[in-house]
Length: 352
View 1 (cartoon, one colour):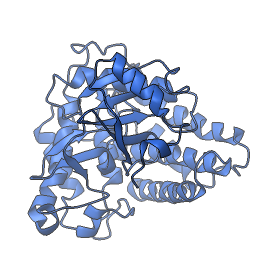
View 2: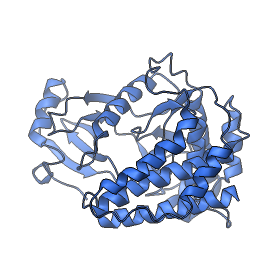
View 3: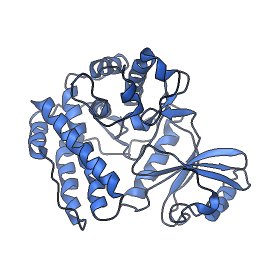
């Protein structure tokens, strides 16, 4: 849906304040054109903005700010700026505002409008008619994850981004506490998720040894990838709000956990344009492609996939809990709760 500047919800974007800030950044002046919401995400807000003959994508935290929303976006801005000089495909940051006072409490930034498409939302030609091209898209996704995992974060000045020591050891307890914290949301009946304890115990018993730290996107799946309109390449990896320094194999596990199910094998049941078209790379092919571009030991990759199911399931349950409290759309909360159940079902299948 397209929105004129006068119809933009001021709780999301104060158009006049945004214009003054853009003037201060030396960006092209002029009247704003239309504000186009960009579909695909369920957390942060993205709008395509036109002004002064230039197009931007504005990204800000959700309408109902969570305790760490602004901090996560400030970290995202920093990482995108650092990665601009690397082989990792990321959108260029044009201007960033870490002052929450400009847009009524939310930080934000403007990035380039990448010429690419979200394969969960649309599948244009030639991709729609070429199964070989669709299979190559999966390999491109795995390759992008591998390239990120090989980046020297210390050389980029991101050594203080996270706490890699004990990263894997912290995961189960950290996310169980997150799940427990949802009880504070009024109206949430509590987690009704079969298998939480079973999966948590398996993860603790089978945890692999610590590996070389690296950058972890933290939410590496199809909806956070923009593909080239002319080939299978990943044009940009987006939505870096969960980025940290830890074990990069979690990104490959995340890609596998969210990859569309095929031929009755475990995988995501969420509908998407790419899943509907079929002809996708298999999980084994994704792992093999990652291995070609990585120096990391993939012998425990199933563990990382199960951890991704566990962590992502709990993250998505948070939106369900906020929906119960009136802080997110009920339909979105219900949809994500169903996805949480599917993720834990996938994890239980994998560990058995």
